[in-house]
Length: 75
Ligand SMILES: [Zn+2]
Image (cartoon, rainbow, N blue to C red):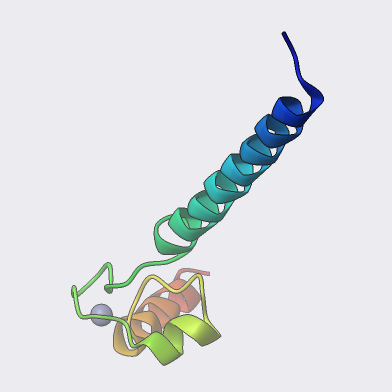
């Protein structure tokens, strides 16, 4: 029952589905695990420019500066 044409189409659909899933996962990873759209400390929105420069930033400039200061003091 397996027509080579059908198989090719299935493979193509499968590949497209896999790709779409990977793109979605990468998008989610960028939005969640690898950073935040809002500062974790004060809740202010982190400017897009800052997020582009620092994709892993989870704080706004002010809070990051403060966190860095605290971090330095602990050492
Ligand atoms: Zn902040």
